[in-house]
Image (tube, rainbow, N blue to C red; front, side, top):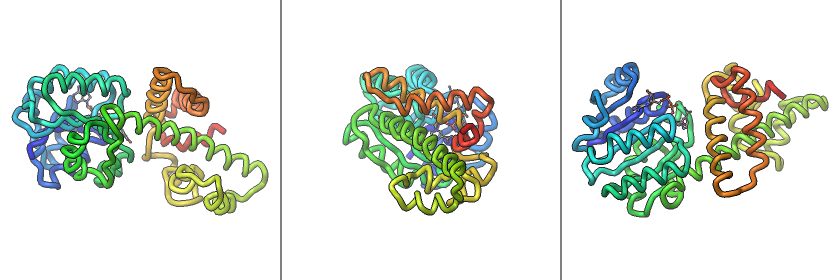
Length: 289
Ligand code: NAD
């Protein structure tokens, strides 16, 4: 297929490369020249504008920083410029309302569009092992699946338009809250004189077990190798966790859902980011407890 790829940053760069590896012809656009240079090294053809990149394509994939940018790119440069037969897939993490808005705009102009945010970080984007949560009709999901499969290990239909974003922010709100809870359990265990490896051995097989503990342990030297073993570098940045928690709080406000634990996690991550730690892995929040 001819696929336009817009936004070739930390995540999009690897995703576009995996589309090339799967045999697609990728027409890339980004505002940053280094991102375009990397895309060319990975076998993409680069263009000076979105409008040129989307001309004549079968699909458009985007991986952009936020909802305002997604809306302006689709409304200004994709809709009306890509063929109406092209499937539009936005993989960015954005707010549910904007995702639905843009899909509606696209639908009115005759396009099929899905929201398809991802779980998994830069390593999963490079390795083609992302999990995609897809919002759209059955037919749109069926059309999107083979394209997304070239970039991920799992492609799940979350429901109608916006449901992918809804699943993503609910998941990441749970992750933020469970990471804080895991960190405080380790710190309390330490104060109570427990050996932390012993606590891990017990809790990872008991009812406190969770992904933040067994797959992403925030304590260096305990559990599997994680960013904690690398000075909290790499992994999932605190700033991105905060972004997702803010999206979750906004969505909860829109529908009047009480989210006291998510709200507290957002406060703690906001304070941690404001203290200058937005770039470190989110499990480093353990240092504040
Ligand atoms: P990034 O900042 O590395 O990449 C974004 C890219 O978009 C940049 O190269 C930037 O130049 C480009 N861009 C910005 N405005 C543009 C425009 N108008 N037209 C074309 N290109 C434009 O960010 P990232 O880490 O790759 O994240 C991208 C998305 O993926 C975000 O929505 C983020 O929340 C989500 N996400 C990131 C991770 C992660 O671990 N980094 C994990 C899951 C989801």
